[in-house]
Image (cartoon, rainbow, N blue to C red; front, top):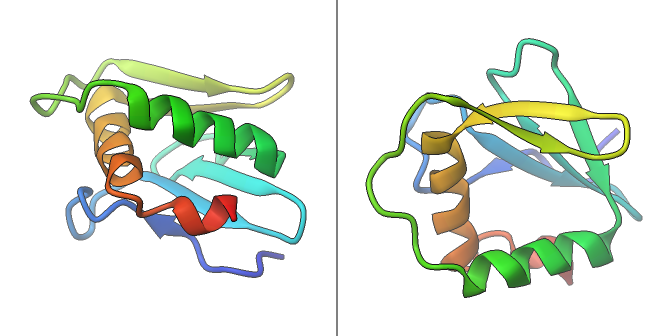
Length: 103
């Protein structure tokens, strides 16, 4: 189904569940490996580029964050993660680890 394997941020520890990204020819997919629903959020490349641009302008996350649920939403899909995992994803975005998905 996916033309590239799922990728997580290098800021996510080995063996930890994290936010993952994959791509098909026309869609970028995000999921969280520990999300009990197994939800996959699918967005257009332009939307993913906008997300990357916004996260790159944001201050770098400090600290690990907490384990309170954080929800990534589209019209009909909700992926559940937590602040610690989201922060690891954001640090990866800011380091350019996901730029190839937006090209």
